[in-house]
Image 1 (tube, helix red, strand yellow):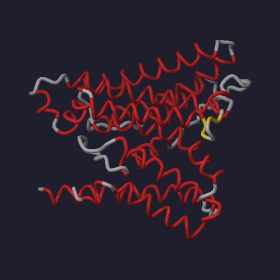
Image 2 (cartoon, rainbow, N blue to C red; image 1 turned 180 degrees about the horizontal axis):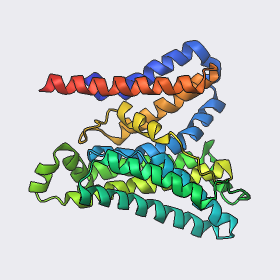
Image 3 (cartoon, rainbow, N blue to C red; image 1 turned 90 degrees about the vertical axis):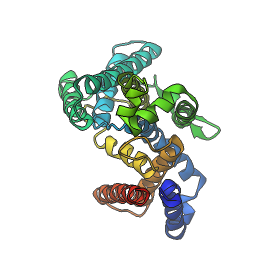
Length: 308
């Protein structure tokens, strides 16, 4: 893989900043917009961290948005029903982690393609969310989660959590046995199995981490929207996958890092903000994301051909 391909996220972000400088320099580079970008980065950044672990094992998760929507509804219902804030948060985090682990376990045991399993999960979670809320929204949360939106040193607490999760995830992947085994499973699962690695446990662990990250993102989402919406999170899996791929992680697994993922997530959020500032239609923005994914994967494919 060439240097350009390895650092394609940084290159893309530099080009985007250059475009913003010429198109919207006063507004885009203002202090208020910087705080706004960090605030918007919290949810997709957390989702991208979890997706990194999944993709590094050679997997994929299409159920991210649907699970976020379901956990959003569960969190809202718990708070409305007078559960304490701490217990509500704990239940959501445990449920997210458990569901993620279950998805990883199903993939490992059945040996079905992660695409198929998570596609089924995506439809199921969304359906459960609508049944759970009786096809309505859950309102009346009050201010119990407002502390997640408080600013510290000018940065929202949710963004601080996202940055902390990024640092911890980078440490896990770079400096722990589990992290090295995640790369091994994604690089060559059969060879990893021959080396004595329990590939099922590694995959379950990766999906469990992904579920935890989704749960954390759902808490920030719930705090912002102050309600439970069964349709929440639609399309969020696209942002997470785009951030990971733009950051240089291979969809085939085994190649990538969390720093690149963070840069990729920042790129996506900055692109969204710039498009909004320029008044570009949201659906046009979705089209650009599709093109960006295609170009990022194309660069990776060209890099592999040059190495072979």
